Each structure stands twice: as structure tokens, then as C-alpha cells.
Length: 196
Image (cartoon, rainbow, N blue to C red; front, side, top):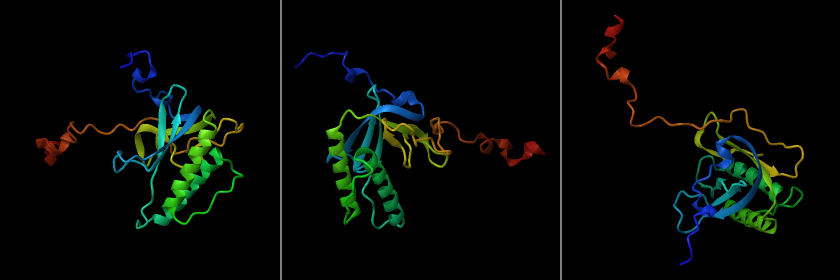
């Protein structure tokens, strides 16, 4: 067994991405992850991971679509738009995107190409937009903005990135399930007699 070095970064504990501050985060690197056989059923098929200089990270998950879903066409269009956004930033906007026979092939091939591009230039730096979801879908943890454009290369001089108008800048804190929800309806005066 090798020596245990508690000075190593692996013992630093969880580091919070951008100290939990929503906004545009600069000088991040990108990694790609793929679902492993040991991962849970709900685990994303692919992940785009944005890693800050302090090694804190935030992920964006991508899933194969359900062809039987009522909104399949809408979701396919949304997934295609995101993949095109990622392609433009990692591979280049002028590079021709191949055509695909299925949505599964599209996701698999695109992430394979993303992995190759990142491996070829692992030190390239990017900026990414993060928030706590939006007004309709508040989140407890910091996450990558839902819709593109949400990241770009640091070499872009005039950024197109911005927080959406409905972005949440603070975390959503769910109600404490242990606390009494509504004491008004559990007290004797709830019949309205206190108002008579």
C-alpha cells in the first residue's frame, strides 16, 4: 500500500462550483462522460462536465429519447439544437455535421466526436452560464443553463452568453417535510368561530 497523503486534492471534500454563485463562469475545461453498466437506470446516457480551476464541476446530462413519447418530435428538435450548439463550440461552426438515421445514432456519434475534440485539445478554456433553474423549474443546486447558448470558448471576445430573464440566482429550498404544513386547519378555531 502506498502512503496516504492528506495534502492531496482528493481529500479536500466537495468543492462548490463557482462558490455557489449563479452567472457566467470563465476558464473552465470540459470533459465528456458516458453511462457505465454500473450506473443507475436514471443516470444520463452522456454528460458534459464543466470543470472550474478549483476542480469543482457541474454537469449537463443527455438522454436517449423515448420514441413513443407524445412530445418526441419537440424533444428531438431541442436535443438536435443543443448538440449543434456543442458541436459549434467544440469542433467548429464551419465543420459539417454528419446525417443520422436515428436519434440514438445521433447522440452516440455526436458524443464520440465531442470526446475526440476534447482529447485533442484538453487544455482549451471555456465560459459557461450557470443558474438555479428558472421560475418554472427552480433547482436546489447550481446547474448549467437549460437552453443554448450556455457555453463558448474563452477566445470569443464579445460573448453571446447571458442569464435568461427567468433565471433563478438563488437556490430553491424545499419545504421541511417534518414541519407542520398548516396549523390553521388543525386548530379548533379553524371552523371560523374566531372571526365571528
